[in-house]
Amino acid sequence: MNNWISALADLQQQGEPCVLVTIIEELGSTPRNAGSKMVVSATRTYDTIGGGHLEYKAMTIARDMLESGKQDTQLQRFNLGASLGQCCGGATVLLFEPMGQVQAQIAVFGAGHVARALVPLLASLPCRVRWIDSRELEFPEHIPSGVRKIVTDEPVDEIADLPAGCYCIVMTHNHALDLELSAALLKRNDFTYFGLIGSKTKRVKFEHRLRDRGISPQHLQRMRCPMGLSEVKGKLPVEIAISIAGEIIATYNAHFGQHTARADPITHLLPSSRRSHATT
Image (tube, rainbow, N blue to C red):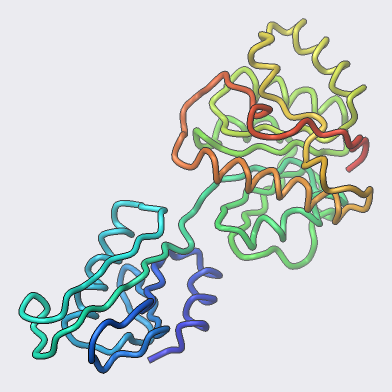
């Protein structure tokens, strides 16, 4: 059988959800080793926790978790004996940890310096990314797994194809395009997160122009600008990218599964960013 560590890494790279099963505790005289692990995907298992009926039960529970989309870890105690078809007594405690469930569909508009630092970070998370720009040459030669590169002369048109609950990040090279994208996203208003790169001054200007286009104050509150965690300081593209990725993680941890239009601002979850991201 494949080593569980390698299997977990391979499944994560492929974007395939799985459950990591670990023996936490052995009670009584049983042949199993505490700390043993196996990985269960929808179709295969990797490594072993000792075989037998207990392993079969663990596989069944893990696949039920995958089918239902459960995200929470859970502990289960199995009393060995007739219920598990074992001849010996004692009990085993198993930990079930869901891994690799897609937490967020993300659209990144722009392929500038910050975006090129950000997208590989997002690709390493349980996310799927659409990376959109009109400039083919701005994209790196290697596009990370889980990222779909979209080159289009009309980036705003891509908004119609975004799934409800999408995480939207606007950081293009053009303020006029940023404004058009912002207006289209706020009019649709079924995103989970919308971040716009820029300073507080840029936000004030955009709010004025967006109000002139009929965007309500409630919808404007949902726009994160400046975006990124204020606790992460620095002006380097990778530092800005890390702060934005941290904000994305905080948001999907709090809102996974809430894929409906909401007027609640993200600011009740995250501290106001003091950073001024004026460039991409």
